[in-house]
Length: 399
View 1 (cartoon, one colour):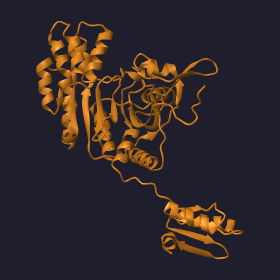
View 2 (cartoon, one colour):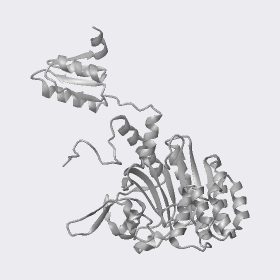
View 3 (cartoon, helix red, strand yellow):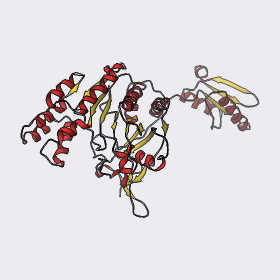
View 4 (cartoon, helix red, strand yellow):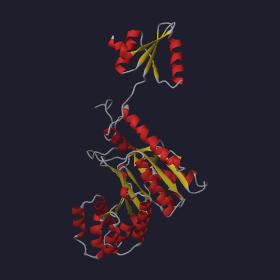
């Protein structure tokens, strides 16, 4: 039987040096945005009971989850989503805390994507959940924070804003079952016009069908609201979305904001606004979120909630592609002559206390230490014997 001891599972990858540095920098920047707004960090287990993700409102197909059993035969799942575990955490551990709860996280999510799709099965994600707060003030807080978070990492981003209630209201007027309604939603989400037309051509051409057919094309600036109202009349989700858009525009964010009424997220727990973030140079959605006012009820702690998640891996790949990330060795190597090893370790510790990054030599001779320092591109070697002798590596190489 073939042994997989020198490779890694499909959909995962190793990170080395510069990429680790870029990822940590992005984590730090995003956490700083969240902390500055009063959000506190939480962590949930990588392993949860499968029941957490199989709730009717979850909208996560079981075939996309990595599943296993514990010693009692209970079904577990590797965390495919962070919002559901945080909803569980809120309902069980934080029910007595004053509202709203401002929580953020940095943790991995796992999806069992079909092979050859080019998607990662393991993604580092960070995001926030604002729980126990409804209304426009909370939505503005979260949306403006999503835009600030992306701006802290990249200048060229955009947020696409929609409303789950708009599609649900139109879809409810179609004479179709749940399975076909889901096929329509998927076609709209992927902007697959041919597949959508193939389904809708078989239905009676009512106003609702005509509006659904047009839905993926209702994308742009404020003019989208007028076109949508002409198609299906005024409706509460559309009116609310217009007010939200204008409020964000008044904050000077209109140039980063687009309206997309074809934004119909997969997770059924979204109840109102939904939004996605894109960054130039990345074909992936790097940020997604929305309002999910009904989800906490499934855990016995009904409350309004809104949040978003950011794909840290996607932002890391983008940072690496734009350059500027280089792995820098410690500038100083400290080498102890024979009999002076402890003195050398103490000398290196003293340098680090003064803020100097340095390595302790593990080599037997000065020549070996110098060869290593040259290969690593270090600035100098400090030889510790009866006295301390400093040798500049570049000068030594020139001799």
